[in-house]
Amino acid sequence: MSQLTEHIDSFLNAEKVRQLFPVLGQKVNGKELIYFDNAATTQKPQNVIDAISDYYAQYNANIHRGLHSLAEKATAAYENTRKTIREFIQANEVEEVIFTSGTTESINLVASAFGRKFINPGDEVIISELEHHSNIVPWQMICEEKGADLKAIPVDEKGDLDIHAFRNLLSENTKIVAINHVSNSLGTINPVKNIIEIAHQAGAVVLLDGAQASAHIDIDVKDLNCDFYAFSAHKLFGPTGVGVLYGKRDLLESMSPYQGGGEMIKEVSLEKTTYADLPYKFEAGTPNIADVVAFDEAIRFVKSLGKKENILGYERSLLDFATELLKQIPGLKIIGEANEKIGVVSFIVEGLHHFDIGMMLDAKGIAVRTGHHCTQPLMQSFGIDGTVRASFSIYNTLDEVSIFVESLKEIVEKWR
Ligand code: PMP
Image (tube, rainbow, N blue to C red; front, side):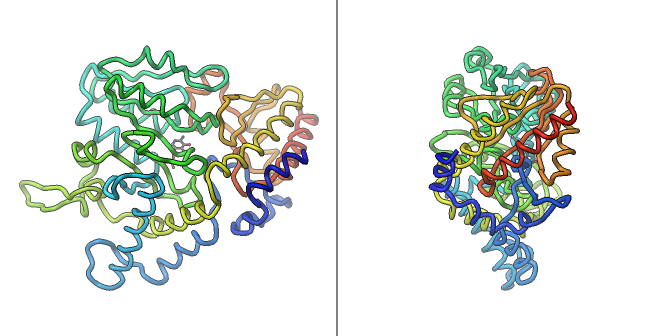
């Protein structure tokens, strides 16, 4: 225990980091809030909150079209975030960074625009059993529309993808492989570099759903050699309603627009429209300017924490501590014990419903997620309908983990 504490202190001072997050200083149901629902959304530091109100209070204006000073300032701030994101994910060019409303829209954009152009009857799309519904349903929709087949890589009992089965699923008809970088339900970090290499050898392109990876793992799209990468600001200490789609330039250029409207055109006549260059071709309408601007502050915050491997190391320490303690609770079973995990622990308790556990923890001020976590096929593969999920972030502490496990023990002893 003391070793763990030292380990953690050497990486990060969570108590100090917490001070930057106003929401964490409150009581919920009369108890100090313990927020363990970070995989659903992270909390926001004060600099992100301030950036949103500064934009509205000082330079609210529509971007790109206006020539006046406020419009210029707003445009510069919006485009500055694009530069920050390019660097954050190591993309070659800012034109490869498209702002969306979130991971969900980024995936829908690719399923729709790539799918309409490149997926034909008899083609195949490969996803996995680990996917969030956001990386299942858009592919089902386009496969149904195009008469293509959707296949899924199976997951083993530890929560790892079966790479051997993946090789067997691939064929010359496989057009795209869409896989999450990290599983939201189990925390599994997938061997995405390997998956990308195998898919490319078969001639398929690869989309990575990075919703759960971006806050914990360095994203280097060039090194990964992925064709598309999707993530959301709100899981990365930024605002809701903003996300990113990275795409390789040649692929993005070969795809038709996803939505039509203002901003995405060069010239419109009633007969014909020519489209704007990247990235604007995929950014129809007035975007979420305030939140894109504030996203820059979120990245600034993440960078201030130092190396991502230290962030993940810290969260893994919390996970290891929690896992060890949880395993001592009678009737508790952990779902998903892959070797490579982020700080996410999912579990069920024999004789107790996950919803009831969640509600009783909430009464003690502890926020966890319960249910299927938008991964119903994954739950089905484990023969369950949901879990309790605790997901850790850099502002969580060992003390919080201890209180959580003690509270859970009390609940289990009383009700099971
Ligand atoms: N994929 C994964 C793995 C996720 O965890 C989530 C969010 N829970 C999404 C996609 C969807 O993200 P958003 O709701 O921000 O679009």
